[in-house]
Structure formats: C-alpha cells, structure tokens
Image 1 (cartoon, helix red, strand yellow):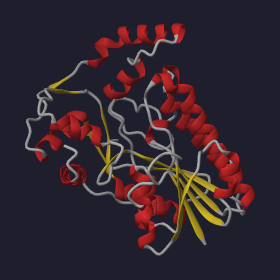
Image 2: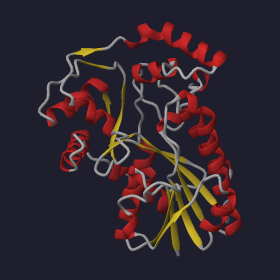
Image 3: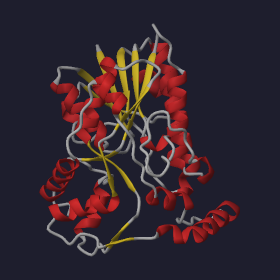
Image 4: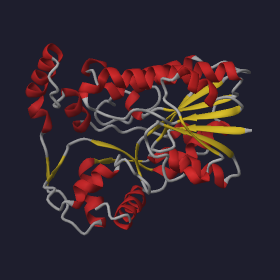
Length: 327
C-alpha cells in the first residue's frame, strides 16, 4: 500500500513524511517542479515533481495509491496573487480529488486551515461549526482554502473515496524552511519589537499537527472536519515567549491597528479599480486584530489528538532557527 503526501517541500509536509516513514509506511511524495524536494525527500520511496494543475501528471501521481494526505497549497496573503491562488488551491485540489476517485484511492485527508472558519464572537472560542465571515474582504488564502475544503468534503463517497479535512492552527517547530511561523521568530530576533498586534491565534507544534493528520486518516469520520490547534494566545503573549527564548526585550505595547481601517478600505478600492499592487488590506488588519481562537475538542474526543504547551513549540522553533543560522 502506497501513501501519497503532496507538498513535501513545505514545513508540515516534510514532518508528516518523517512520521509516516517512522511508522513503516511506504510513501510517495510530490513537490512543485522547480522547487527543492525538501528535507524529508531522502526518506521517501519516491519523490515526484508534479504541478497541481497538470491533470495528466496528477493522474500518474495517484496510480497505485491507497491513501492521500493533500498538504500542498499556495500560501500567500499577497492580494495581487488572488486569481492564481484560487486556481492553484481550488482547481489543483479538484484535479487531485477527481483523479483519486478514478484511481480507486480509499481515503483522502485534506489539509485546510482554521482560517476557513469565521472570527469567533468576542470572548468566545470557535470550532468546526463557526461559519466563515471572511468573504467580504476578498482574501485569497481564506477564500481558496474554504472552497477547496468544501469541495473535498462534498466528494466524500462512503465505500469508495472517503474524504475528510483537518484545520491546523499556526504551526511552529523545526524545519520551517519557508518561514511560515518562523516569520514571528525573525521579527522577535530583531530586538526592536516595541509593540504587538492586538489579536491572537492558536499556537501548535508542527509535529503535533502531523500526528493529528495520521490520527484523522486512521480514526476520523469521513465527511467531517477537525481543528488541529493548540494553545490560544494573544500575539503579545506569543512575542513575549519568543523574545524570552531569544533573550530579547518583549513588546511593551499593543498596536491599535484598526485605526488604519479607513486607509485599508481605500487601498482595497483602488486596487480593485486600477489593478495597482497595493499591499494594505482591510482583511489583514481584521485578521491581526481579532482573537482567532479555536477549540480542538472534536479532534481530542474523536481522534485522541493532543498537543504540547505553546512555550515548548516556540522554544523548539527558536532552537532550530538558531542551529540553522537563520537568525
């Protein structure tokens, strides 16, 4: 039986491959042509370059595969890449799901994100039932991941191709080669971080998320989604823990970001009318000003999912960045 992992060159993909191989799985991994295959490539039975939009290539990729972890995605918040991001994340996922069904793949776990869920009401914690309310902001990452998750779950066919989705929080840990959670660490390492955004997020170790993927594959109910989060912390608390691990000064203030909302809305209108590559977005201000806190209770109860304390995840990430000379 062959397990396919897409997106092996990324942070989560490489850690998932490592864990699967440790468990004795035969793993085929795919990565975007032109990219390096990543730190786990030497562990694979096969490493295959494959463009998500190359239908013929995707058809070949899934042949002989029993189960799929679809980790690959275009991760960016650049508004000028909105159309490309929708194409890659939505149509690429559609191509994979359709090819998997034709090839007789038994089960597919799709990596989504808590960003497909809505912003919880102040003072509350969201879960898999929290409806999305990001649509008004036109953010490619939220829109494309929400649509790709929906099409995966809609494709669930018991007894044929069973599909489910997992929704990670903000991941930290070793081998973050693309500086995802590592962006926070690099900011903290500058030693001049005087203020933090007012919002917050769910902090989780990448290896806990990788293990959660395997639990979902083995125990998850087809057609369902599972939040794979960790501790819910404000950004100020996150940067305090990071700067403490780095022996730097913690932030002293919280930025009133929403004061810039009128300017961000103007930027959105100008970009929509003229196509100018303006970076400021109202949606990003909302995201960094909101407490995007979510519960992993469903995954705990149904999958046996657990996560380590946030300081451990952050310290592990800082240690790797230091060892690699990236800070």
